[in-house]
Length: 124
Image 1: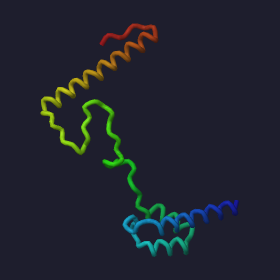
Image 2: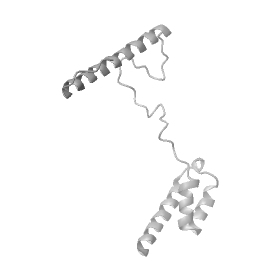
Image 3: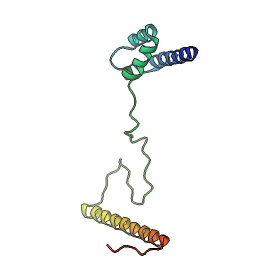
Image 4: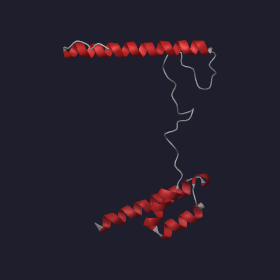
């Protein structure tokens, strides 16, 4: 058990040092890189954990940028970079058509499920 913990601590120590050294200074929080390196060297386990919890700035994968967003394959899709030239009335009409299309799809799906289940569709 002790050799395993030693190997894990050593791996965490080396990984932390490499990450600190290679990381851009603008992505380091709270202390300069030199201090983080010293903390990790003098306190290998605790310093490494502190680095990964407090010192490192993570990129937010939940907020896609314009480069990472994939364009939708829907007809009439306009890129966020281009202005929509439709009038408000045209946009509202398009939304109404889209809502009606979704309602029809839901109705067809409900009828298909009712038909497969052998029962009659419930009246709404």
